[in-house]
Amino acid sequence: MKIAVLSGKGGTGKTTVATNLFATLEKGMLIDTDVEEPNSHLFLKPVILERIPVKKEYPVVDEELCTLCGKCGDFCRYNAILPAKKKVLVYPELCHDCGGCQLLCPTDAIRYYPRTIGNIYTGKTLSGRSVAYGDLLVGEVSGVPIIEQLREISGDEKIVLIDSPPGTACSTVAAVEGVDYAIIVAEPTPFGVSDMKLVVEMLGALQIPMGVVINKAGLGDREIYDYCQSERLEILAEIPFSKAYAKQYAQGGLLSETFPPFRETMELILDKVSKAGGRELL
Amino acid sequence: MKIAVCAKTTGMDAQADDRFGRAEYYVIFDTETRSSETFENPAKGEPAGAGGSAVRFISQQGAQAVLAPELGPKAVDALRAFELAAFRYTEKKTVRETIADFLDGKLAKADVSTTKSKHGLRRA
Image (tube, rainbow over all chains, first blue to last red; front, side, top):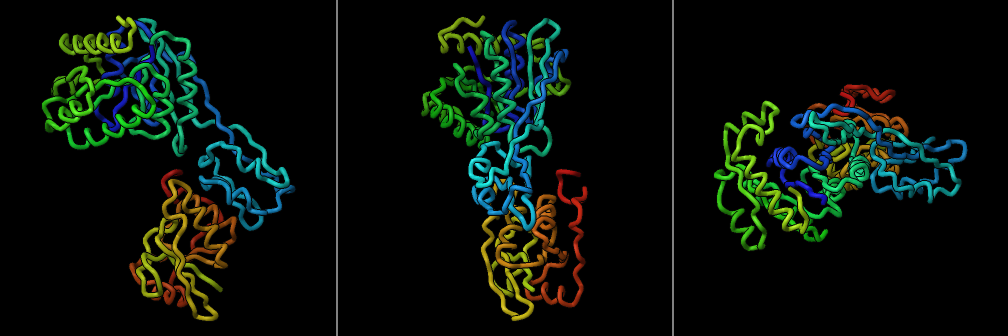
C-alpha cells in the first residue's frame, strides 16, 4: 500500500505526521519527495548508504550546423533556448527536457546531453528500515525527475509512506500519482483551509481516496470542520496544538517516541487508513 | 540608434519601471528621429527566464541598447549574446527624463561581458 502525506500549505505538519506514522508502523519504507526542502531524514536519522545523482538532459547546439533560423526559440515555452545574434544561448536549468527544439531543428544542429540536477540519498534507520530522500540543486526549476526516480526506487516495497511536497504543482502530482491513499495534513486556519481545498480538488481529479488529519487543533476557527463535513471528507484524527510537541519537533525528535497519546493518534490513523485502503497495515 | 527603456505604463511620460525582465512595457526611443514607440513586454508573466526572453524581444524591435534599473544573470547572458549595451538608472524618473540622463552621459554603462556573482540571487 502506497500512502502519500500532503498538505497544500507548507508547514502544516506533513513531515511530522509522515515520520511518526513511519516510526509507529515498524515496517515499510519512507520516501521524502519534498526535494526542495527534504527534512524527514532529520527526524529518522538514517545512515546514508548511497548517493544517486539524478540526471536530466539539455540541448547543446552545434554552431557549425546552426543557421540561427530561430525555430527552437519560438517553440520553447520555458525560455530555455534563445537564438541570439551569432549563436544560440541555452539556459540548461530552464530546460524541461521535452526534446521539441531537437525535433524542429531543420539542420539537425541540436543534441541532448545529460547533467545532474540533484541527488537521491538512500539509507537505513537504526532499526534497519529503508529511507530515501531527494535533494534538488539550488537554481533548478523542477524536481519531478528526482521524485519519479524516488517512486521507482520504492516501487517494489509493499508499504511506502510518501512525504510529499507542498502545493498542487507538477511535483506534488508526481509524488502522489497512483497512490492507494492520501492523508491531508491541514491546520484549522483560513490559509490552511484555502490551500487544502486545492489539494482536495487535485486528489479528486486523480481519483485518490483521502482523509484529513487536523494538526494544531484548537488554533484558528471551525471552517475546516464545516468544509470536511460539506465535502464528506473523513477526519482521521486531530493533533492538538502543543508547545511540548513543538519543542520536541524543534530538537529533531519523534513525538511518537516521547508522547504516548501522540503514538495512539498515529495508530488510530494507520488503522483507519488500512480499513479505507482495504489492506492490513499494522 | 534605438534604445529601450523599462516603463510602468505607456509613452514618454510613463514612470521608468524598477524591473527589467518583468517590466510592464518597453518604450523604444529612436535617437535620430526623436520618435518613440511603446511595446507591452510579452515576457513579463513568464514563470522563469523572463530576462532572456525580454532581451530577445527588444532586439527584435531593433534596439541596440537598454536602459534598465537592474539586470538578472540570465538577462546579462542574453544581452551579451544579442550584442546589446545596457545602462543603469537608479533614480525614480519618467522615461523622458531617463532618456535625457542617458543622452547627457549620466547613466553608468553596465558590464555585460561576464556574468558576475553580483547579478541576481542564483550565483550569490
